[in-house]
Length: 219
Image (tube, rainbow, N blue to C red):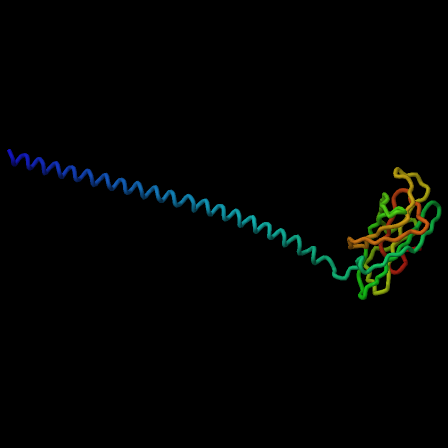
């Protein structure tokens, strides 16, 4: 009887030991899978964010370089600018309802400068306030032809342009008398001003000639 009990106890101990070993192996495998999933998610997210940031910065840098390069290269260093120019009124004349006003810009600098094209204009009243101005750029007006060409102006030399105004003709804006003119030289942004002695009557649009060498634009 004692022998049977001892054998039964030994068999039970063996069976219980086998079940405990299987449970421990399953827990270890489950923990490994969970750790792998957690490490791969942040890696993927980090890669995507880095790529978007790099692409955005690259695009902005390229656009900046493209827009600034050609602009800087297209502007000559020796343009005739307001700081080296003296503006003067050459005079006025008229016939059959048409008036001509001539203006001169003299190079007061120590070096030659280049210019060409149309000046910007704005009529002024007796107090220097702006008046409605409607410029029309043209190489051919009532008084003839002025060629559109580049000019090189030596120190002390000058270039000119003329305005064509109409007298006594009805317009929606009405007529006005200008006692001064504000001018922006071609390819510049700074302004120059000059008085028009005794004033000049203007009704409607004003034709503006290209600049010409010397005082040849005023006839």
